[in-house]
Length: 364
Image (cartoon, rainbow, N blue to C red; front, side, top):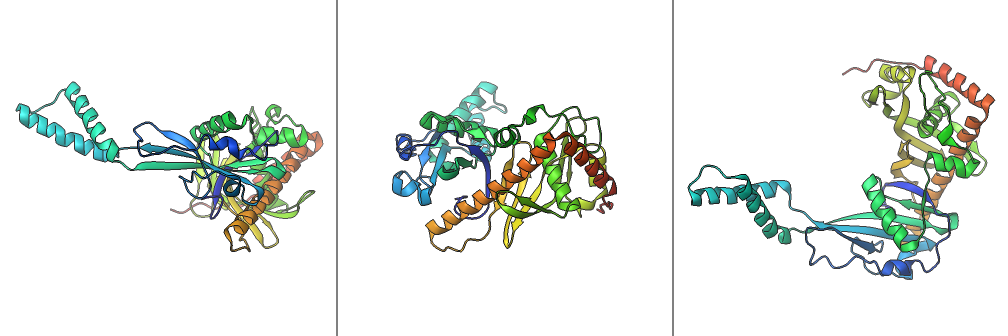
């Protein structure tokens, strides 16, 4: 599963009130049921971290290394659309031959589809999907792999119903308030390259700032709680502006393309890009969705441990280091953003940086 190996895509949440040590017992009552009698309705329930039907939820299985690790499994039977169409067509042809007709009316077609669906559905293997989460009790953080709004809604409804805890998304607005009591939702636009922007997009401005730091200021920041980190922002680049539409630059060398320069000078702000943080020999790579601070495909530094528990614990430590560095960088940006003199100086410096950036035409 994603937190145990490979890259992981996630959202981060603050847990406002520490969950009790025996909180896992609340999930036991909502373990996923048997899928043997599964029909066309989706069922969901909680399982342990070993596989999507791991119904053994106990202190020994779901608290590896002191982290609460559970999965919300969703199970459903589905008939592939191509199979359903083929089986329906077979039955329609049989019906027309028996009735000696060369057409079939809508009502009969609907009845055949219903009969075929009822016959095929019990034969279909269940489709299993999982939404994983890890609760870091020591730091009051929760990481969850729910990326889409539907996944997130499903997770939050089920998690809150069981624990009574209202999680707080670590998005640009809530993080600014938690770390610096800053009202990022009331910021006026920086207008890095153009003054026509009427509103602010805190996450996008932060990603633009990271890009500026990585190229114009040596790509290194010293964090009060974390030490020095090197920063690199790379393509593919997704620029998004409601008035002018979406621009995706991925061919050739997007960082120095003429299209990238044109997007910047037209006032567009960076919505998504690849972000790398490094400290010594340890490297973290991900793609950052700036609007909600969704972390996609995060690659953590290699672990030294070989046993399952040791590897998981090291990965969680690496994940917290990334979260702490990311938060520290954002705090620095927020502090600059709330200081009028520093903000104006940043705007001028970034405008100059944009004007002087090299640009080459992308060749097809």
